[in-house]
Image (cartoon, rainbow, N blue to C red; front, side, top):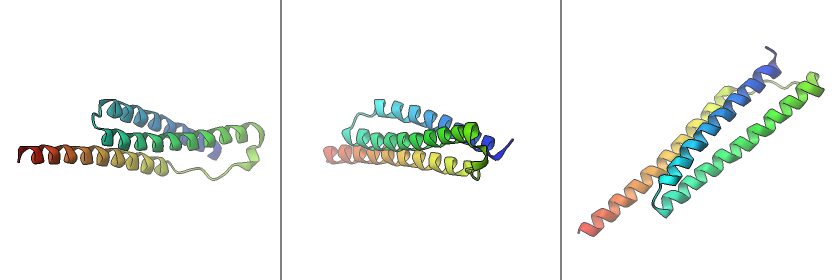
Length: 113
């Protein structure tokens, strides 16, 4: 497998992961009841969509290079960057949910007093 083919394969794998993440967080957004949680999850989804756009552009560029300019191959992108992005997104979502749960707990505590 050439460097270009490997990079295209890695980029396609990242796009599949981002699709899965977007689906998961869209479900969380649908389940969110508080406006603050919804806003946080919308920000996470926006980040995922931005990454998807970036990786789609990379994929399209690699396909064009394969078709028209195979000699312009760049060094393959690391799959680690995709995994780092995925982990960052999961942490962002978990933090948003955790913050919302803390807010709810604080509201319950203050209403009990």
